[in-house]
Image 1 (cartoon, rainbow, N blue to C red):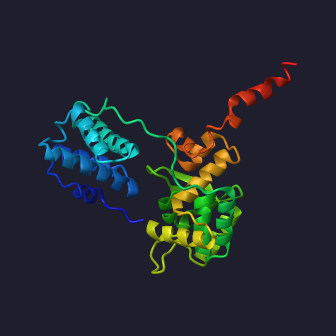
Image 2: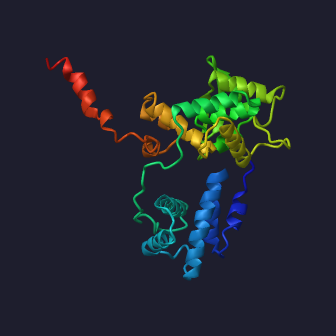
Image 3: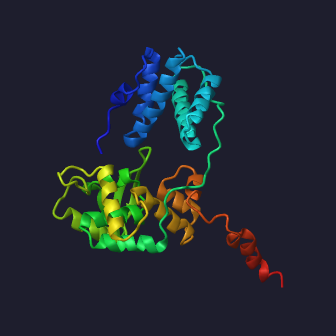
Length: 306
């Protein structure tokens, strides 16, 4: 995926900054790449514009100003999760400014953030729907099959899948592998299910380098093109729901943790979630009394209590 340079991301933040503010913004954004950097640049652009409208500089705001920005976003109808993300970005920027000795202290250090609803409201696929989707993908061209398999069987983010390169395919202790760059720049090696590996082999053919997934024009498939592939295959599978690449990531996490009972820590690592609460959002049945710990404890102690 082509990513903008830090200076290009900064150029989208329109207000005029002091030299110290510009150094801070440029340095902060340089620590991120791709969609993450774009999202953080958007957050900071909105905050900087809000400050400019009130004749505030970024170095002069106080905690009350940042909380006022959050209230204004909420009054505009922004979701709590969106407001919380904006505040998290702002806090990260000021934390960076303090670390680089551009500011003495962070005005965002003690800002109150909205409580986030940790229940996922994303479209979900059940086991039969996911199976139907994989069957439909199997009769598609290999690239579509490989893309669906990576998203559904490895739970990759769409940006991780479309950024995959042939050079990063490998073999490790009998496992076919793919090395990817996760959100935040972490590089990890993941195993590929046999059907995924076969589909990728067919998709790349005789090519030995370059993107795993190509668009019709020969360039790297982007996230929008990947979304179209997923939607087309979902329709051919007879699924009436709106299915996106994230729907398949959602299905992977749900199937792993709450279908086959893979330990939460392992699912969190596979999904590359920094917070286990994010992983738990995908458990739509976690409030079921059938799964209450009291039954497990009672069964465990039954033999000793006779």
